[in-house]
Image 1 (cartoon, one colour):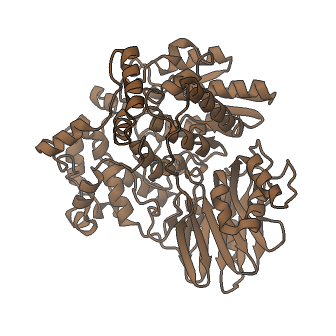
Image 2: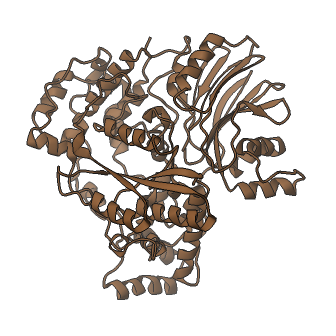
Image 3: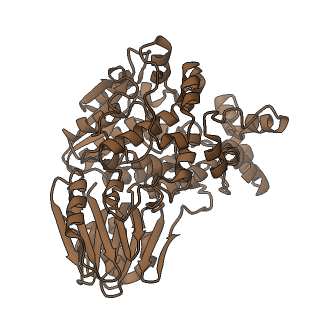
Length: 614
């Protein structure tokens, strides 16, 4: 992921070259293929280039068509041919080898902000109009690329790297208490516009930011549509269309040359590896694939490495397997070189970073299986209600009756009946798991008890077929998860790409009837026929057989106590004595919850040691 940062001064003040150079140095790890610092009247930009492909890229930014509007950002577009044809229909002559950046500029010149919904892919970028003195910034719908910004007086700072903005001397390092409160309750902040720092904002996925002399406004420009169900004549037709869209999604993300795949022994990632191998053969694109897997043996009998190896042998690709037992909880968290832009409850973060470092020795792009569980596991109950209310009784009998005849049971409804029953009967106390160690004054200030009750409510939406999946895909969860695969977290010049979160694929799946295609990933299983060994293709979804963290705690290899000295800032959020007492009680089910303040403490000390806190 190329790195970028910019400073806009609406009073035409010259940019601070010293600041731009420090920003560029901060971004250097992102772009080993070139560094550029550029100034315009009232504006300064820095860019570090990572060459990935497969589409042509602009190696020097900002770039422009007319010398008036300049683009700075990280852009990888899907559906390039469709956008190019649309531009040609309106009189533009567009070469097939046009860069993604030029396509964005051409679309902007033709349609301005109305062009943004037609831009699909992974991107975050800024467009600076030197004449109108306006800045327009955009982030893609799924949130694959981060974008941060902060305003101080007449200056606006922006970047895809949080630390780059924090170098600006006017930007306060004061923590955002709302963000910290959410993290202590749920591991992540539910407000997609916030960061851990009060003065720095995050542009939510699918949003555009406009900045001029009289406004600084972020608004949503696109969202996942709610469309009519797709009713095809044959189940095989669903499979064929899914396979075609998935192959396209992989093909447009597969660079020439060396590519990695994060591959467990499950269906999602092995199917992606299989499709990538198939696409490389069909298009004669030289793609040297290598799989990377984490296996938890000998901590417990983990089958992931075995199944991943079976898939790799079948696909004739090399595989590297790393044992999770090589890393103890919180190992390396005291190292100031460990990148933690914001708090994270992942005790094995070093292992995650080591995986990326291994990938970096092979290539610059890694494919992940993120997103496969949202729609492909399916909910039958909303579909049943939809058919009943629409009086589609014949389809209801054929669909549900046919499933019962074939499988000997009705499809799993997944209507959340047990949770509702517990709430109705009072057997589910939402405050039972509320952390006891949260500082009362902080809890009162941030209304955390009320917030906790709100967060216990299940996500839902008005989508007729896939309400939970639609709500999850439209929330801030996936942008938050994808940011943790970003170079700003991993510290290496490797770009993570998730074909199963391709916007076209997600829209298609949201139209597919849940029964039978989206029951237990039936659609994916059928699409993988002939692609994967049968023992993997028909393997039921299997949760990890053990939790390394709790195993280490139970066998005494690692103990969460005694705690280190707390950062003085942490004491405003958590009672350190109560945290230690909870962890000392060895309440294994609560271990992950009780470690959240420990993670915040590590994070605070980490940024202090790295010298990014003033």
